[in-house]
Each structure stands twice: as C-alpha cells, then as structure tokens.
Length: 287
Ligand SMILES: CC(C)(COP(=O)(O)OP(=O)(O)OC[C@H]1O[C@@H](n2cnc3c(N)ncnc32)[C@H](O)[C@@H]1OP(=O)(O)O)[C@@H](O)C(=O)NCCC(=O)NCCS
Image (spheres, rainbow, N blue to C red):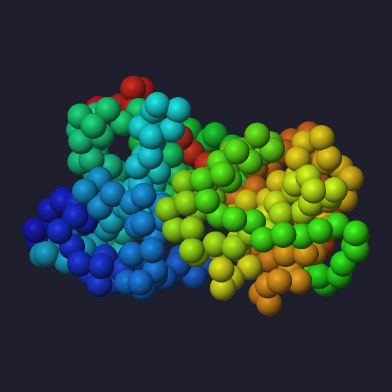
C-alpha cells in the first residue's frame, strides 16, 4: 500500500473536514468540524495549510496535523491546533513521521517554537509528543456551569465592549497568557464572531469579558489588578450569564499553584477537563 506525506495546502475544505472527523473518531469528547467551521478556524487561528502535514494512503488522507503560525515578541511560533490519525492506522508512527517531514520546512522558515495542548488523560498522544521532544509547560483547566445571572451590584454599569484593536491594551490586566484560540489575535481575526461587556464604576472601566457569539464560550475575562478580590469578577460573570442563554464555559484556565481552588469553582462552575500545554524549542529538537 503506498503511503505518502504531503501538506493540506492543495486539499479542499470538504476533504480536510471529512479527514479530520474520520481521524478524530472515538476521541474522548465530541471533535467534529464542518466546512464552514473549518474555514472560520483557519481565519481565526491563523492556520497555515502549507505548514499542516497530511499522510495519504492511496490518495486518501489518513492522518493530519492542523498548524497555525504567529509572530509573538519577534519570534515565529507554530501552534498545533489538532493532530489525528484514523483509528486503524494508529500506533504505526504516522504522527511522528508527519512531524519529521515538516521539520525541514519549519527550520527553513526560522520557526523557533512549537506548542500544543493535549488532554491529561490522552496518554498515547502525550507519549507521542514527548518522544518528539515536546515538554510539559503548564496545566490548563476548563470549567462549565450555568450561573443564575442575578444582579449582584445594582449600581455597577455594564457597557458593550467594542471589539477592536484597543482590546490589546487589556493585556496588562491578565495574570496568565491565554492559549492560542483565546488570544487577542484570534478575537481580532474574526471580531464579528465575538461579543463583550465592560463593567464601569464612576466612568472607569474595571473589568471586562469577551465570549464567542451563539455559545457560552468565554474567551477572556479580567478584572483590573487594583480592584481584584472585591467581587467584581463574580458580578461580571453573572452579568455575562444574564446575556447568554447557554451555560458558561471557561476553557484553558492556567492552574494557579498558589490558589488551587480557582475563581471559576468558587462561583459555582465545575471542572470538565484538564490539559497539558506542551512546548518544543526547535533549536533543541532532534533531527
Ligand atoms: C495521538 C495520535 C495522533 C498519535 O498518532 P500515531 O500515529 O498513532 O502515533 P504513534 O504511532 O507514535 O503512537 C503513539 C502511541 O500511541 C499508542 N498506540 C499504539 N497503538 C495504538 C492504537 N492502535 N490505537 C491508539 N493508540 C495506540 C502507543 O502507546 C504509542 O506509544 P508507544 O509507541 O510508545 O507505544 C493518534 O493516536 C490519534 O489520532 N489519536 C486520536 C486523536 C488524538 O488524540 N489526537 C491528539 C489530540 S492532542
């Protein structure tokens, strides 16, 4: 049987989304994508199909790796936004070979680092990435829950947050860097797909939240550091819930070792899964 390695560049969205769904079958959670969602993901997450390897068997995609590229702090970073091999072909070294085939291109494009997220219970994938030289960098937790949306502080004003380049300045309020899909670049790449509010007191903006329209998926929430631990975050979350019919989901929250009982659990959400963020410095990669 002839096996070849290529990229996803010349493949149609229909073919890539079909291959993605086949390769992720039997995954720990629902992981399907349609053509429209794939096209949005490409735009939002800066996916580069020319840097996304595919493994073909008799012309059919049996393994794929979706990769995005961004320049951050002057450094080119490749983010792996999904890797999978169809169930019958797993355990035959296809994922490592796809990565090995990509390595010369990454080096010639001066890409310095690669990163990915993997479920903490996905031992085959963790083993596969570790063998490629990826190291665990930080632990991320995800939470879900429906709040009652009650108004906790009637004198606070909530205004619509304008989703434009000015949201870049809110970075100074963060206590951890968001993962790729929650980064400000992802939001600005597709600003019409997001909604946000800010909480104001005496005309001063003290907290904000941004979520994906049509879902309860929070992308960013933050309280100005000088006003943290004063109930503003909880008030903000209830105000967001009052505007969204779906349960809220906070994905990829960095575990804070100093304060393991997180904000999201304290306000009544439950942990739904944990993930490792893994990184590879290409200067240290084998090959
Ligand atoms: C994770 C995945 C991409 C690895 O690809 P792969 O081509 O099977 O990689 P490898 O052949 O190097 O196997 C990696 C590990 O998978 C395990 N494995 C072996 N046979 C397997 C099989 N039939 N089914 C599943 N896992 C198997 C082994 O533990 C192997 O590690 P080992 O070589 O040290 O024993 C693939 O298992 C997959 O598609 N899984 C479902 C989707 C997924 O979890 N993607 C990762 C999201 S972060």
